[in-house]
Length: 165
Image (tube, rainbow, N blue to C red; front, side, top):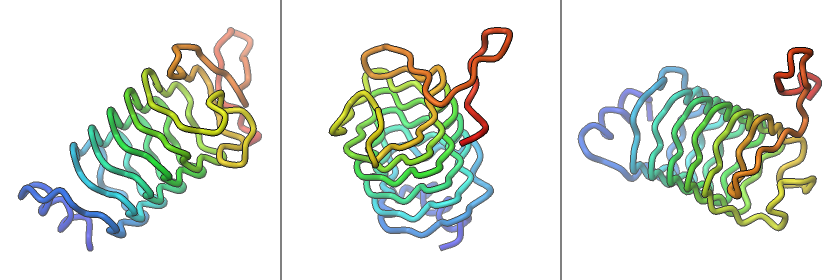
């Protein structure tokens, strides 16, 4: 399906797009897709910067290499989603549901995970194969703590992601 058809069908009230393939999409900046079902969709490499996925079902979706910077994933279901090398910089995942997502080398700089429901074998996001080399810079965890892993502190005291990863 082409992105234009997808957006038209969404505008017409359709919400179930489970299993859809929208790889490498580049024209969805700042679109509102609240309540959409994209479970098991292939959105790898898609530019989804600023997209509103409030209450969306992205369970099992492939978001590898996707740009989700500044997206709103409030109350979104990301169970078993693949977010390897995804850019989630400044995304809002408040109250999101994350049950064992794959997040290898994902960038979670300045991500808000406040009150997110996370089911990882290790809730501290430390060194398991499901989230190796995840960039956590000024990342707010569900308990309100701020994590800075794989970051560089600049001379002015600001913390930024480590470009070596």
